Length: 103
Image (cartoon, rainbow, N blue to C red; front, side):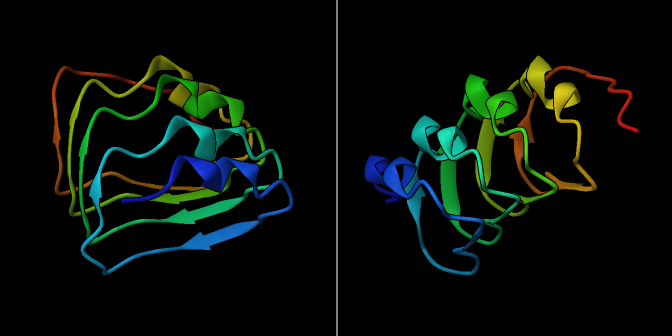
């Protein structure tokens, strides 16, 4: 699992935890780290919905979450990430239909 305490790493800028066997949910505390600009969690066994506070990570530029078992709807706040350049959510189990105008 990714520990909730990861949100206490206030100067964290990049997080690389891809290709492991991590399970459980993505802790919402992760998206409270305002300096975080890159998250790479692809290729794990993470499950559950994306945290709704994902849009509070305003510095986020690259988010790689492919090939997990994430589910539910993609949070509306995803379209409010002002600096996002790469968003890879492929290979999950998301539902619904969402269109975002990411510029």
